[in-house]
Length: 540
Ligand code: GLC
Image 1: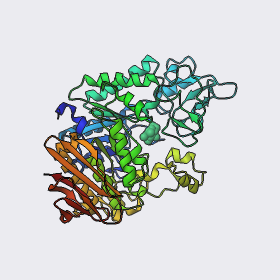
Image 2: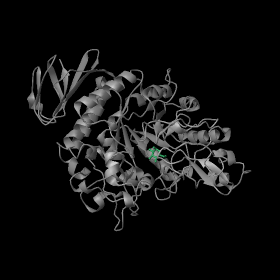
Image 3: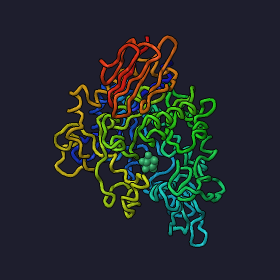
C-alpha cells in the first residue's frame, strides 16, 4: 500500500470533545483531557482521530455553531492547546481530522453580527438575505430538522436562510470573499499539520442561485435528507456548485504531502455520492454511508448493506462503515442492549472492504443515556419536546441526541472517571457505566474492548483485509459470511446472528483461526458457530 495514500487503509476513531475527559473539574471534557488519553487510543490500534468541533462557539449546537474557526472554545482550552493536540497526536504516529463546519457559522460570529447590522454593511452579502413575500418567507425552502429555513430579521426587514437551526445562518459561498475566508482558514489548519477534514452537512453548502421553489414530495419523514416534510429538497441540497466545490477543496489539499483527506457528511443517493467522489477520484476522498447504521441487525439486512456498498462503491471507491456517531442512537441501544450483536457488528466493520469509523464508547459498549426530551440539551430535541415520545418511537425518529453524547466511561468510580467535579457533569452519565467501562473491560479478555483491540490488530496485520476483494457467501439462515481475497491469500468471515447453533460447510479447509468466539469448534472443513458466535479463518 502506497504510504502516501494512508487514508485508504486507515481506521478512524471519533471523539466528541465535550464528553471525553475533563481535566479542569468543570464537568466538561477538554483538549488537555483528550491529550492525556491519546495513549489509550493508540494502544487500541486506531490510526486516525476525528474530533467533533472544539472551536469557539456559544455551544447552542455544542460546537456545530462556530463563532471563531481559529480559537478553541474557552471551556475546551486555548489555541495553543489545539496546536499541542496536533503535535501530540503526530508524536504517536496518528493522524488528526478536524470537523469543518463550512455551511454555516454561529449567529454570534462577528461576520454575522456585522452582516445583520445593516443593508449596506460590507459583510451583508456574506450570508443569504432576501426580501419576504409580503409578510411571508421568500420561498418554501425547509430547514433539514423541519420548519422553514428562513428567519425574519426586523433590523433590516429581510430574511436570512439557515439549512439547520435558526442560530446557524448559512454562509453565501457565491460571494468570493466568503469562499476565500473559509479556504484561508482551511489552509491555516493544513499548514499546522491537520491531516484531514470531516465536512459537516457538506451537501447543503450551495443553494439554488435563482431561489426556485422546492417541489412537493410524498415523504413526510426526512428521507435521506433529499426530501422531508412533504418537500423534495431539489434546490437546497446537492447542487452542481457543491460538487464543483468538492473538487476545488480537493485541489487545495492535494498540494500537501503526505496526502490529506476529505470525508464528507453527505445525504444523497449513492449515485450522487459517487459524483462527490468524482469519476477520476478528484472530489472528496470519502463520504459517509448511512445504510449500516439504519439497517436492522439481521444477517439478511446486513448482507444487503454490504452488497449495496460493494456494488455502488467498487474499487477504486471505498465504502465507509459507521455504526453510530454524535447524531445517532448508540449502537448497543439499537440492538436492545445485546452485547453479542454489538460484537458481531464490530467484527463486520473491521473485516469488510472499506474504512471503519468508531464513535467513542462503542468499543466499551456504551448505551444511550436517559435524557428526557422535555428537558434535553440538544437543540434539535428541544424542537420536538412537545411531540409525545411514543410517537417519536413509533416513527423511529431520533431527535434527542443527548443520549449518544454522554461522558466516556473510564472506570466504575466517581463520575465514571470522566471528571473530578463534585458538581454536575454537562450531561449525566449513561447508567451502564459500572459494568461497561475501560478499567473493567481492559482486564477481561472476553470483553468487547478486548475484541476491538484484537480486530484492530488483525486488520492492521492482514493486507488481505485492507485491499482484498469481498465475496458474499451463501449460508444457512441467520448467518452472514464473506471472503476476502488477494492473490495467494484468502480469509473467511462467518457471523451467526441467531440464538441457535449453526454449522457451516466450508469450500476449503482451514489453515488458521484468526479470531473467533469458540476457537475449538472449528474442525477442518466445517465451522460450528454457537449462538452469536463468529469466526475469522484463513484458508489453506
Ligand atoms: C451535522 C452534525 C450535527 C449538527 C449539524 C449542524 O449533521 O453532525 O451534529 O447538528 O450538522 O451543523
